[in-house]
Length: 299
Ligand code: NAD
Image (tube, rainbow, N blue to C red):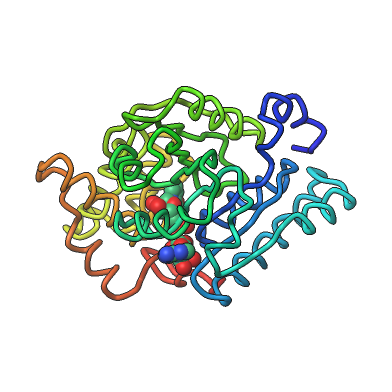
């Protein structure tokens, strides 16, 4: 994808919609920042420490360089994209953002605190969006002073590759906010799908119980990890097995999403598998810590 190809999408965006705040420079945040830069937007990237911000920035710079190698960007476009990226650890530095996409840890209290810290610095018209995988958009929106300007914008991992964005209006989200969110996702070359606000939306309501069941199969010795993944790849035509996908997503993220489903539906079918809990406790979180159901070189 090139900036040129994105121009028709970008035109449908409000003129002022060009500075995107991204909160969290981790797996998703760095990817969202990357695709927004690639689409021609300015990006203000915030995390809690300089080390996290620097790690995210390094991954973005590497990603943009890969875009040049793969001829998705010209060298000139790459250089421009790099100059449009600013990083910070201070919430007030996101004051200029037209929309802020939060991609912090999958905990309600963390996300609500992020929006509370941003609120006094942002213009009233700034849209707040969350990349949450499962937390109620209506509940997050109600924790801010701008529920009509709050929307779920759920990107998929790895962000530069995956086409889908679930656009999730909360009960109080205005139609204009939804339209802007859809236009922004499209401007980044994504296919937005509007989904209503239920726990896990569509994607994780279906995916996470499957991953959790695969972990139960492993725990009970039904097959080893490779065997379970091979069954799903070769028998169901899934491009990745559920356990390798869990490693890519992050086992802590998978556990947190299962907990949201469990606590939201009060249904035991969503309880996280004890083996998943144990691996998270051991900090075996998948690709990002070098060990999950498989082992990986450290990033
Ligand atoms: P991650 O652990 O890789 O990154 C989270 C980042 O948020 C970390 O860098 C952390 O330092 C930062 N952070 C935590 N609290 C913060 C705060 N108060 N202010 C600023 N930054 C803060 O996690 P991730 O996988 O990128 O997930 C982020 C969000 O995206 C979660 O809500 C998750 O459910 C969602 N999500 C994840 C995936 C996936 O496959 N990993 C897919 C779609 C959506």
